[in-house]
Length: 180
Ligand code: ATP
Ligand code: MG
Image (cartoon, rainbow, N blue to C red; front, top):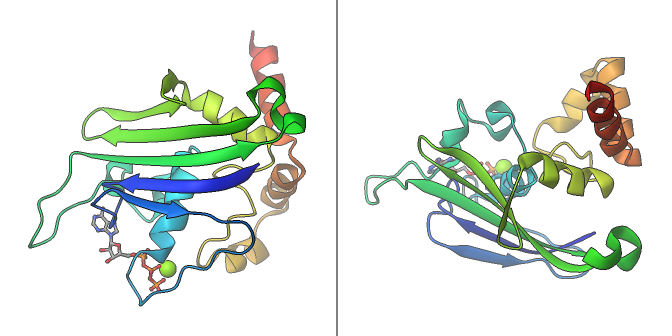
């Protein structure tokens, strides 16, 4: 799975619709302190289904919505779209480009879309779990994360390894099957 494009609107400091093309190879984001570099990584985690406001440095999930400044009013919603590309081996007949969108409105919670069609949070989580990535993927290393990994409990560290190995999607499906 390749990330191709990230679109943000009303997400944290990205108040105006913004688009970031993710080219082949290494992408670097540089800028002064507080310009929004970490917010970009958080947007990627958020659109993949991050459920913990704390790990997005917020108190509640609506804290991802642009909160306004002295010069600009707050927004009512935040929306992030990640354009991904999957190979035939990964996705069979769904191979090619897929747009994953998450939107949150004040008082209305989050909604997800795949290529414009409404889907459940779970569908998005499984899509990324099968590709050995996702909101908790060890491939996404937030500021301060290295220290957390070192201090993690063995069970938490095992979960990180399972996510890296791409088997956490299987565990979720087994759990679902057992509860039916
Ligand atoms: P550093 O180099 O210090 O790590 P950074 O480039 O990673 O900085 P971020 O932490 O991504 O910067 O951005 C922080 C900025 O985002 C702060 O100015 C903060 O006010 C702003 N911000 C975060 N959430 C919101 C929000 N909901 N509404 C408006 N601005 C927000
Ligand atoms: Mg930062």
